[in-house]
Image (cartoon, rainbow, N blue to C red; front, side, top):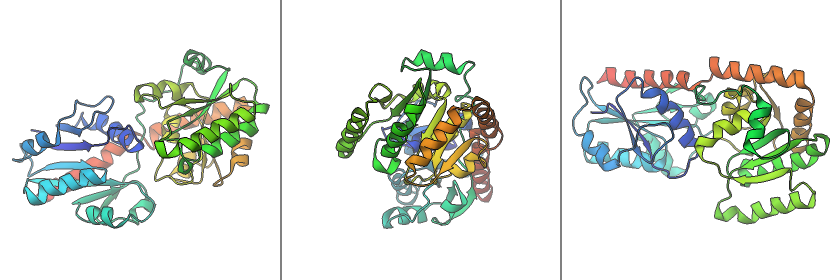
Length: 347
């Protein structure tokens, strides 16, 4: 009888999926846990929502109720139905990362949660029932530094002697165009560097994607700025540790896991003033923050880091250390567990 049900209803592997998977891989050590919905890498095989409801009809041994941890609107809706209509002995915990006001429907759903965990103090200001602020953490067992970065990069087969990448959906909100512009400016001064756009464009962003590729073609850099599409989650750790730099320039980001996973991989980052990036950067020790829409500033930062091996090595070492000591998935799981324990202790 599981005491903890963690839902993942999205078939796509998104940032929310990644953060959930990171925590679940830690939580299975401490809880009788069931994943509900769609599979996640390194996590238990999922059960269906119907099976979760069946298993939740009676409280788990030694607990007054089971906890359902939800992260998306459909998951909240299903949980509310199970608790309030079916009267199952469960409590609902929601994680909120958004640093902006939710629209009316999700606000109503969130108001029905038994506990809310915010990932930052800023996010906590937009939701009710916040029991704790617990930053997302990287899985420092999965994302690890390469023994030899040059060899790891060569093994990927993308060409050049080192790599830079942006990772995520190809769309304006993620600033993919800013990355492309920054690379067009920086790469002529960085022989041997290959830039990757790792991610896919949804149907509504196909023209945007084609325009970016045309921009690269016109710049004569088609062999050095490569659009490699979405990669399976299982491939991302190997890509992260092989890169020399991650560049994330979103115009909006609720939190942002990519820089954190790059840090756990011993890879510094350049990021825009979005999400939780400034905290990750640790005053320049592990990353450099540039202004919003700052393609030129990003190009300058990339150039400065990659042409200074001593600085790059120091940032890489600091990145891994900060990820392990301050913002790991283990620390996140421990913070979440304290919220669960507080709910269970009240009965």
